[in-house]
Length: 164
Image 1: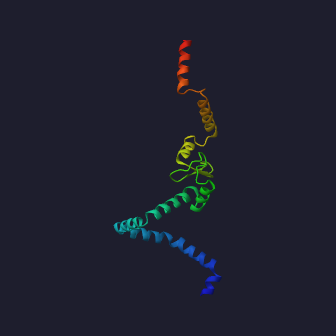
Image 2: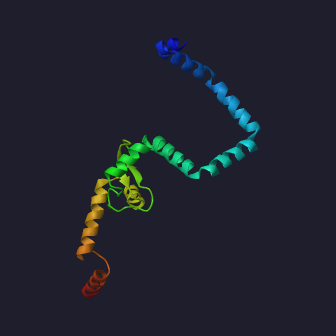
Image 3: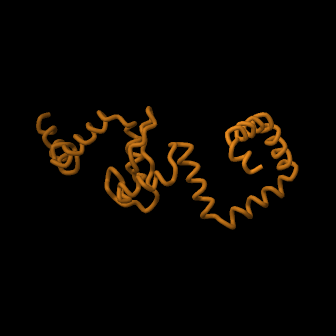
């Protein structure tokens, strides 16, 4: 029997896959029906399992989120985290919480890890480089005192009043 399994692994796997395809819905329906019949018991068991290992549950949830949303597993996230030395790719600050995965919304390509503020900022600008560069120019002007702001605003108002 052992030799048969070793020599026919692919054949056995194909047979098992075919069985699961045929019977999978049946089996899932049976499990679902059994769970619904014993819903209170099932929920109590779920709660107990959750409270025994809250931290493990959070990690599993986060792993699932990374995989489902970005196609990234936890090891890949940790490698990216190490490459960035645990810092946000934009502001270079070490955040108090997890770094967010930044990705291109059109291609889905992962660009790096950002803190919550930088991630929100990128989202508000909808990844538009032109808008971001205008924002940079705006900030540069305001820091030189050329733009409206604080004391400069009063000077502009005074100048306008003199002309009228």
